[in-house]
Image (cartoon, rainbow, N blue to C red):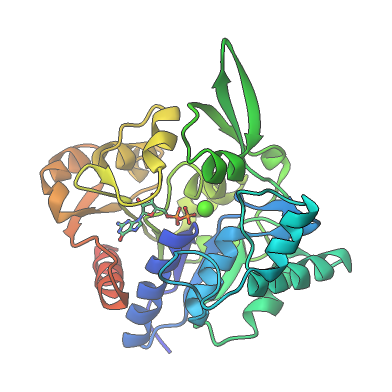
Length: 322
Ligand code: GDP
Ligand code: CA
């Protein structure tokens, strides 16, 4: 095998769709499989089990067992155990866990309890399928995301999942925090893979709560500075977030919901930021000059990841930009 060594930084659903495209693009080039560094800031403990939503989204999608209609969880899942948990008043009434999905969480929690690290658990889980990519958690530390929201004249804190799923990001966020992240280390292999990469691709994932935590792990930015090229893909098309509520997250960190502002948030490598190039949508082509003026090479491409072919074309554009 020859071809570029590619690392993808990914969140959940957007990260998974993009990773499917990268896998396809690399297969066509007979290049080695990508290493995918997945956000673990969404992780949480619920009803005694450890959930890793972004890791599961990427794993299930690469394995082809994800529920594409609903956008999360396993295809064809049932909810018998969830109904029983609700009858007990256990867990969160607004947070559904499928039966097959709970099997994943039970297996993971058991292995963690027996002393395996999250990296070892993911390696074991990924080994069940031919994923065509190497998956790594961003860190082995538990660094769940906490959201501080306005509450009258004061503020209160809640887990990101409560804010996102229960409140649909409807409570105004003041800031996002990953307690403990300043003392966290990249998971084994993460910094090494990034620093040795011919190209690192930032998936069009949520810049604040998916890519943000990965970049906040000490050592990741330094590793990115050592990579040969870093190319970001815009999560914004036509001045809007495609799905989800990423605009609310961007507002909380003072970034406007437009592609040039997100590119500027990541910053140009030439001025201490991350990016060599930025892939932006045809609908946002007029922003290309602003991106270039900020010192980042703009690449205009179709950004809708409607199927694997479209995601692969997007991945090809990003790889060509490197
Ligand atoms: P989550 O962790 O499951 O919320 O997913 P991610 O953070 O990986 O991805 C969510 C982001 O993906 C959203 O903010 C969207 O803007 C972006 N997104 C979703 N679908 C598409 C698409 O087809 N094209 C692009 N460019 N971005 C997308
Ligand atoms: Ca996520």
